[in-house]
Length: 134
Image 1 (spheres, rainbow, N blue to C red):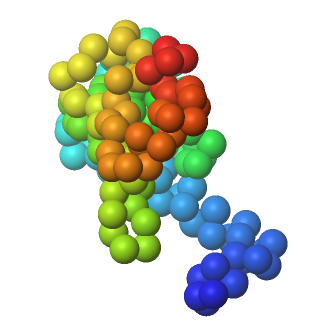
Image 2: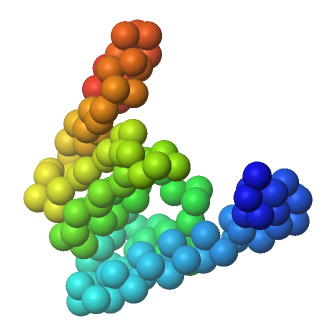
Image 3: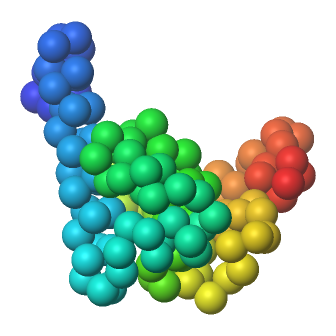
């Protein structure tokens, strides 16, 4: 087992790692918004939420943010979100994509793209996919 996996067995190390990820994501959201020349108020208006909610997302939301919340925030900036899950050999097992031009009012279920044999196996087992529950 690698050092990283072993170190996360320690509760303090795992907590610290999560805090760092929270800070990085929050910082990145604010940074991207500023790069796009948008205020928190403008993003809030695009999303139909309060400016204080955007402030929360940019300061403390981090990993507690849902994928849908993250995708909608990124869309409000006029950007595209791509998320891939890869195994140790680099094979893409699942991929999520939401384009900047997709309507914010549409459910994000269509963003998951079937990839490889693992997706086919999931379907054969009858596991619900995001398309099934949207």
